[in-house]
Image 1 (cartoon, rainbow, N blue to C red):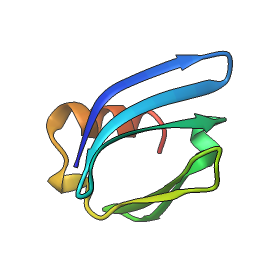
Image 2 (cartoon, helix red, strand yellow):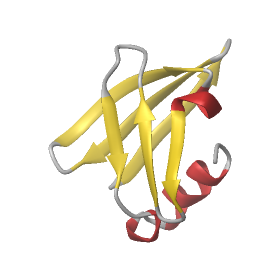
Image 3 (tube, rainbow, N blue to C red):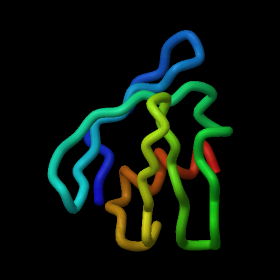
Image 4 (tube, rainbow, N blue to C red):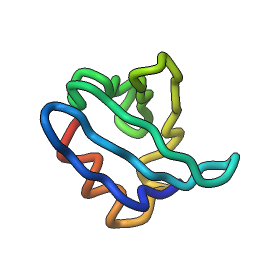
Amino acid sequence: KKILTLKETRGFSFWQVLTDAGELSFTLQDTSRSIAKISEDRAFIFDICGNRYEIESFAALDRKSRKCMELYI
């Protein structure tokens, strides 16, 4: 639903997000390769623990979150 914070260092990105299930944090290694765009409006994110997160609609994200995602897709 929303990216609260996003920090990058040494090839890793650290995400704090708001989801349907509440607030959570996860880490990606090689961020661009950890995000798979499924369609123009949908993507999956795969964290370093093998968890998968779905962005059902980029249009539903707030402006700041969409801008963050545009950097990687």
